Image (tube, rainbow, N blue to C red; front, side, top):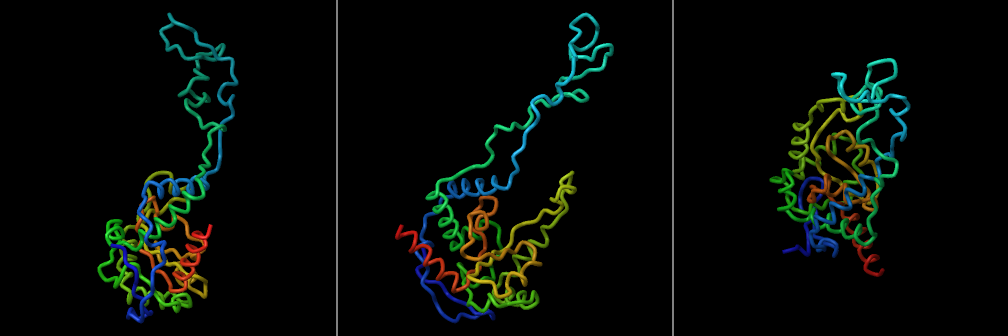
Amino acid sequence: MVKLYAKVFNLEGKQVGRIRLPEVFRTPLRPDVIKRAVIAIQSHRLQPKGRDPYAGKRTTAESWGVGHGLSRVPRLRDSSRAAFAPGTVGGRLAHPPTVEKKIYKKIPKKEKRLALFSAIAATASKNIVEGRGHIIERVPDIPLIVTDDLESVKRAKDLKNVLVNLGVWPDIERVKESIKVRSGKGKMRGRRIKMAVGPLIVVSKNDGIFEAARNFPGVDVVNVRDLNPELLAPGAHPGRLTLWTSSSIEELRKMSLSVGAD
C-alpha cells in the first residue's frame, strides 16, 4: 500500500507536520527500465576508442610452413622470430576495440522519465530500501522528509548531528567500514578506493549543504532538478536511502504536474 502522506521532521529528529506525497511516488516499480536508463547514463562517460586497423601488421613476416620442427606462426625474414600473430612481440591484438562500435547508448525520453519516476517511488518503500542493504532501524519514517532548514547547514559537524538525530548516521558508518583499496592496476588509474553507497540528500537549493556533506563517504547531495536514475539507483539497484527537503517535494510535485500536462 502506497502512502498518501508522509511525516516531516526538523533537524532534531522530531515530527513537525505532514505533507501529501506527489503522484510520482505511486509509480510502479520497473527495475528493467531503471537498469536500461542507468546503463545509458554510464555509457555517456565512456570515451570512444579503437585500434589502427594495421597495428601489428606492418611487417613482411610469413609462416615457414611445416617440416621445420617449429610452430607455423608468421616469422620475420632472415630470422626465426615470430611476428604478426596475436601473442607475439609487436603482433596484432586478437580482438581489438573497433572504432565502429557504438558505446553511446540512447533511451527514449518517455522511458527515461519512467525510469526516473520509478526510482523516486522506490525510495519510499521501506522493504526496497532495506533490501538494498541500507541500515534504517533508527530512521523514523520512509520516505524521510526534513524541513528546509537542512539546506542551510554549512558545517560538517552540524550536519553530522542532524544525521544522527534522523537515524541516518549508522548507514554512513556502514559505508566507512566498507572502504577498501582495490587490488590490481586500477589503483593507478583513478579507481583506488572501493566503497558502498550511502544516503542521498535531495534539496531545492544550495545554502551550504553541498559543502557540509562533501567529506562524508558515500553521501551525495543533489538539486531535485538534477535527479537521474543512477543517483537514485546506483548500480541499477533501486531503493537508495534518500532524505528529501519539504521544498524539494514541492518541486517534485510541480515537475510531475508539468509532465502530466504534456
